[in-house]
Amino acid sequence: LTSVYMIVLVVAAASSAAFTPALPLSRAPPALLRSPPPLLATSPAASDGRPTPLQRLKTATSSVAGFLDRRYFLVGVVTAVALAAAYPPLGRRGGPLRPERTVAWGATCGIFLLSGLNLPTSELARAAVSVRLHALIQGFNLLLIPLTTVLSCNALLAAGLLQPALRDGMVVMGLLPTTINMCVALSRSSGGDEAVAIFNAVLGNLLGVLLTPYLLLKLVGSAGALSAADTLQKLATRVLLPLLVGQLLRPPLQGAGVLAGRRKLLSRSSESLLLLIVYSTFCDTFLRGFGVPPATLAGLLAFVAGLHASHLWLAWQLGGLAGLRAKQRITLTLTATQKTLALGMPLLGVVFAGRPDLGLLCTPLLLQHPLQLLVGSLLSPRLKRIAAEEAP
Image (cartoon, rainbow, N blue to C red):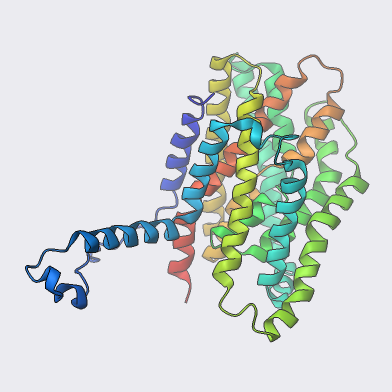
């Protein structure tokens, strides 16, 4: 299983190339080594021009600390995946850390509480009326992705390269709405429009309750009922309520000066909660496996990864053609290309109940979930630089 995930890193590297801004030729590359501060250069211990061992240690420590500060989220993702691979039972569902409570509730509610504290109400109001952007995100997620998925799967099925059960699982995955918390946290850590991501996380999952069963009936020939009441309850308690609490706490905390100068702290806290989700996701993935032959799993992972990379590229290009600013373009790319596991697994259980190959049907979604999280995390630093370069 570990060797299979090397394909994910290859796809992530290929995807990140699409987001590499061109550097002007006239810009000189930054110096790799900085001159020592004047105080150190003139000290007796460094009078011969060579730094002392203590000075070298301080310089090395400062360089490492600066690197970790700039690459906090990326280093955190690598660390989380490594820890999950080292001992998966610790973070699995039902394990000692109880991720069904600490992650499903604690991390999700915490992310939206921090969003409420960080976002001005005017930002949320502005996002609510961005109708064209919402239409782009939902149209890409619920119409274009299912279309490209069906066409690709049918071509592979006709060529004898894809099993019918895996084709059905891929189609169901393509019909699902975007994630609830992952797209918001990744948009924030990547410098995207967090308010737009929040709005579309809620809107997409509400639309998914209505559209996904209907599209399943048309494309797969099976239909299942998603519980609208259950979905609304989850959205209300895990998204809207903590967001509202954060918005209500924001004015008095601002007035008391508690939030002043703490924007980076709020951002790092949100990223840390997302890292907890990464860790728990990969603990389950490494422990559970997929129950299919390694060759089949590797081929399916390559197909899922390639399809996801193409969707990321298409969404990025669409944002450019639509004339979106970098922040909105980043949110479009990260929100429109993700698929929710929280609605997907119950839906698969309802639609294909009783089928002996149910485990095989779930495999594409079980691959897509950690894949989109890992690729989005690896792209986050590059996207954040793009957003910072455009900022006035």
